[in-house]
Figure 1 (cartoon, each protein chain N blue to C red):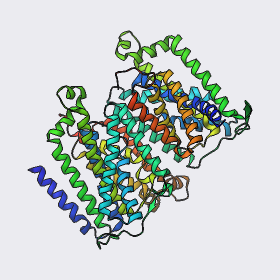
Figure 2 (figure 1 turned 30 degrees about the horizontal axis):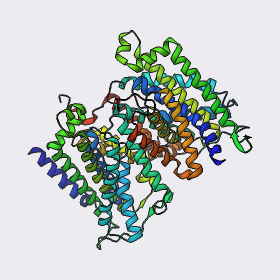
Figure 3 (figure 1 turned 60 degrees about the horizontal axis):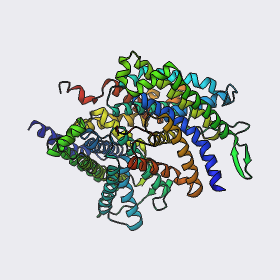
Figure 4 (figure 1 turned 90 degrees about the vertical axis):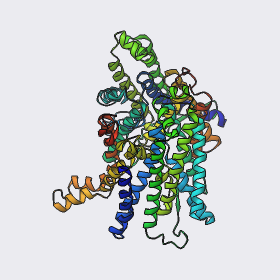
Length: 331
Length: 289
């Protein structure tokens, strides 16, 4: 009951937030990214956290949603919702192929094979003609039921809804039979199999569910940005960012992925937008033309990935259960 | 003729791939760790060769004498500081740790060396000679291949003949039993990671004269090294050698008969086919897939 109240308060706060901050496009943009990373991490958590199958290729499902929606829209002017549904279909197809190849294997092999599948998808999209190749796809005008898609708030609410659905599914799943089966598989696959759990079937179900949610987020992202290319939506880096967000928050927990996104997305934004450098310049601590100043201005554009790397290493060494793990010592 | 030309150039570049694959396979065999920083360690080797050439004017092949011990020490220290501490953790933690280390290395390289690709041009970089009428053989690739053969042979002898080599193999077969027999397994891990790093850096230095040197170059090689390891059987040194040569030839053939754009797709498809039909790899032990 207490949890339900907290959830209701959180959701209402999230719905009210755009009204409070007015229509500041910059802040809404960051919030959309935050909701997206939270959705992606929560969706990944279903297969990675609960079933214990570390997929390193979730960018493929995100890209499937983004590319299918955009290709259908740019070539046939298809309704974005139909595009989204088609994206889910493509993501399911990729998930089924991946699952049928690798779920007979375990450990290192699943991680490696999920990368291989994602790379095949990325290179195929890069090499084909109708996907726009290296140039990507740019759409200037998105028709959508007369809704004003130039404002960012429809995407904010779309992403919020996806996140709430993902968290809802996770919350239901972890107390359901399927959820218990998945956790049993994670803890000991052989023991789970000997108790009569169809290991491959349940792993596949978890992956499919995760892929569907990831591809929905991909479709919304594509419609929101209106420009996609392989390095933005299909790169291995995206897969790794999704995993890091989950790990840092707390893998295999309901709120961990959201917490990870709340911490990492603003951090990345601070580093990327050079907030640190600008503040130091304004305070006169560092002069803009000094070597340190030039480094802060030019170098730190790559800085956020470097910081991600450092956080990952520290997290694995000192906080392998994530931040939420700190509060659950007894479990 | 195209066939033989592709075969020759594929085998030559496959030799260097094999070297990178052996390093990764050795680490996997002895430590049971998938090293996702392997590609970035190769990238470090490329930059070492580049700076040895431009700043110290040492030929990239001669600079191996410097690069190998330095990178061995880097690997040894990395194992002591980071990887050795997660050796009993779940494998996904090890993967993430090595990914984190790789991100730190590649992005530090981006900060330090900028994203401009560099080219190491030696006097013989583009020279080649022809055999059997019209098959051309690139001199730097041939040199790299011969050096690779030498290093691989020395590594075999080291693993087969020396006490340390035997201790490494014992650790690889059964870590606990090896420890009970009085082998210092944590030292063996550090030595293994040192050798793995040295092999990665050497492979990087060997391809430096024929490849763009870039901070993110490691990414491509990482996936290739994994394909090689899985193809040969995770943990098998012979398997990685053969796997490297096969991948080199497959790449050259698909570039020649299909297109260079699709060569990586063919390589990854081969990888999935191996997982599907022979998951233990060509030379791997059955049972731990």
